[in-house]
Length: 153
Figure 1 (tube, rainbow, N blue to C red):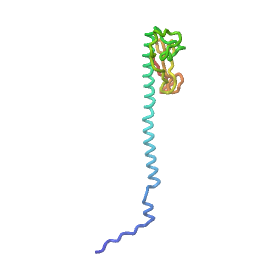
Figure 2: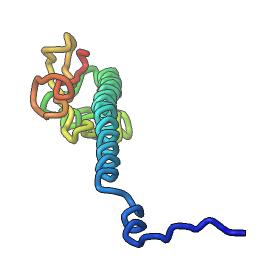
Figure 3: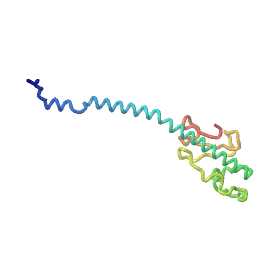
Figure 4: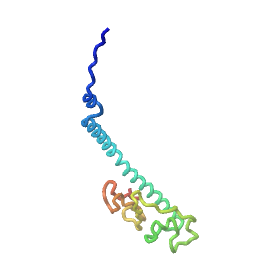
């Protein structure tokens, strides 16, 4: 019985057929870049929204502490005492009326690393005080993530 003869392998042909061509590699890199871009574009705004939400939550907590302070001491902290009056009694305050341990443990920074702003009397909130974050840019005003977030929202 005769077996069909197999063509002899050509070493050059075998080398050429092994691995990926430059075009195939470029297509894969392009697809990976496209997917990375889509993920970044869709995920990046989530960080801004979560920081804005955290600032609103912090402001609500600070408002609650300010209201408790006002109920105990019959007034809000002065502009010079600021929000620090919520964690330690400011000078001139009756220590017997000030809540032991304060109204908050410590005044935190906003999600962008800037201090929360406290102004008394308030001009934008329609209340006795304005409590706000200056947003991502740390400057008054702005739009989007740079907009001020306050107790008037």
